[in-house]
Image (cartoon, rainbow, N blue to C red; front, side, top):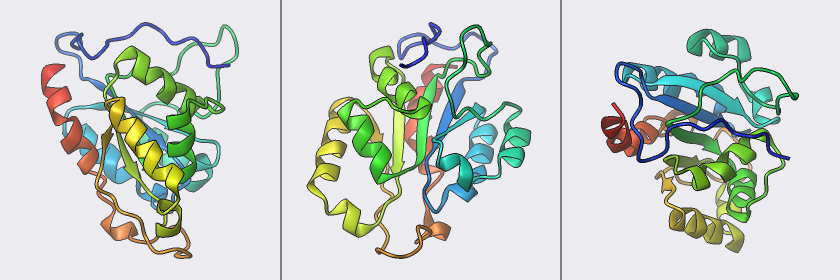
Length: 196
């Protein structure tokens, strides 16, 4: 069901000289998602080109027009039809921010029922460095499946950010002003240096 992925740089292949590394920001339906521009701007200032992939529900949480104007690329949310051009270059790295309980558990289980999850499931096999900034409430974080999912993602080499759970029933926006968007770039900084 996942669309074929163009061969792109892997973790051992640097980006072409003079070309900025390309970061996919995968946005899920977390209460902090409307602030994803914070990460996009920080990434661009750190010399990344950025494209956004949103889960179908995550797309409802962001200002698509503003995001596309900021990145210069269309937001991806659904698979391309056969023969349609690829709107984004292959990624050099991926940041999943915010990452919801649902996405983290599906990803760790190898479920690929959205474009975002398809990209994440393939990233492991392609050696694409990936960081995740979880955004969920404390009741969800207490579920045993969540801890097991984080353990599995770590074993796959995924870098897990320090964003902690917020209190339940906070409307999904708990800690919005404290979400550590730029931590994604800090975790990916060694990758960016080796790919330039």
